[in-house]
Image (tube, rainbow, N blue to C red; front, side):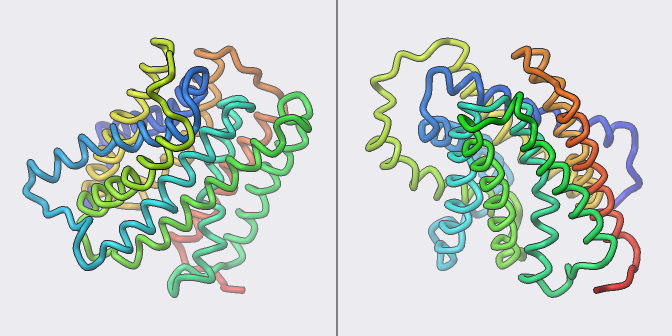
Length: 297
């Protein structure tokens, strides 16, 4: 690993922008497409550049080898379920709320990793970080202007979707000896396989008459926010390591709020700002505790 340069920070910022832009594009996509179809098209289109990279680099894709059940499980838990829940939830809430709720994944990961890993035990700094971060999420749910009885469950489903991302990440540790490109391609393939019959049975997308805007958003979600973003993530991981790449979590909710305001004219209430700061501070404390030795509790 090398010391980050200006170009590395530029790539990190681009990655954060791409991932943050996914939320307002999901919102636009829901104007014409159902949540299952959005999840399917996003995963299917995202598979293309990742598989293409594997073929170009002559990396073996092990989707149908003896470890197929791991790839299938991770594809279902890490892609199919959260992509559907997010798309379903965003139908009734602002995209900037989804960006904030999804930014809570490092906090959920801290709690689950304590119980399901050997070297990610919780400590005092992490506890404080998790409490501050989740207090911001709870505070956000008290914003009656943006979250009410009509969309409360939608916001909750997005938060649950973020938890499935974490569970999928923990499962990925079990096959951590494999190349990232291979793992990503394999789980994308299995996620596509899962979603084909579900999409055909539940939403029959061939009967849709989607708008150009929604179609552009779906294509963007697949090729850029899923496929290209994962490849960019790989490059940052290889060059600068996981700790540097993880800093993207600080930027996503900020960019999500800005982009939602610019493209969808979404409201930015005082509680949204406070919640974002609480989540960012919580993430900072959690990640800071991983870089120094602190007292376990």
